[in-house]
Amino acid sequence: MALNKVEICGVDTSKLPVLKHEEMLKLFDRIHAGDPTAREEFISGNLRLVLSVVQRFAGRGETMDDLFQVGCIGLMKSIDNFDTTLGVRFSTYAVPMIIGEIRRYLRDNNSIRVSRSLRDTAYKAMQMKERLSAELGREPTIAEIAAKLELKQEDVTMAMDAIQDPISLFEPIFNDGGDALYVMDQIHDEKDNDETWLDGIAIRGAIERLGDRERKIVKMRFFDGRTQMEVAEEIGISQAQVSRLEKSALARMKKQI
Image: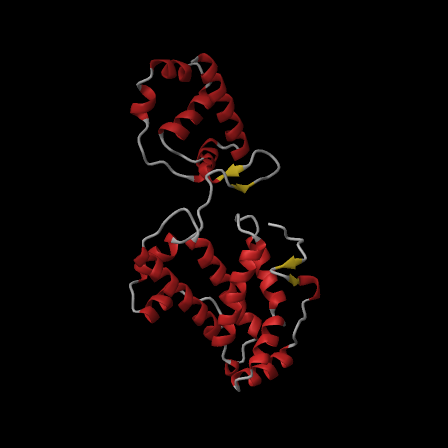
């Protein structure tokens, strides 16, 4: 995605106007009175808001033009549903709506498919979340969303979790300047690996040739399914040291096997 792109969907973003709060309120009066030119002026005056939101979704494999068009749909929905009597700034109400519209677009184009009923529940929950956020001035709880939708909390939680963007097991989540800590390092494996590992005589022999600390790390990591952080806490060394010792042990085992 070209973040520095000036022209998007035929619009020169470097020349986009910005409306003041008072100007927006006056335009809303004209919009509610049925003035179509006021609506067009209002949309044009808030395209920079759409652009700022779209830039948050860099690296998703979608073009800036496509995301900008979807964001404009969210902007128009915001205009149609915004209540000026609530005393909330338009941008406060519109940003979650635009984000929600883009997220829906990305989910619908995701290769991982979620059932229609689960997706419908999730979309209703997201819409209710946006509505309650505007009304309450804060992010609503799952219980509040579920109560409004007359659904069980666990159903709402399951639906919203199902449409979350997938994350790679190799996504780094911490780096202290040494070896990075990845998502896969924090996954606790409940499966008993003894049969898989100990059935191999060559592997058993390679493990026995390791030093006491390396052997303990290999056992905790691959037999017990412990994370590097859990191993580090039990042994009394840093996660970076565990990572280095683990890699060294596996490299030695590979050579011996």
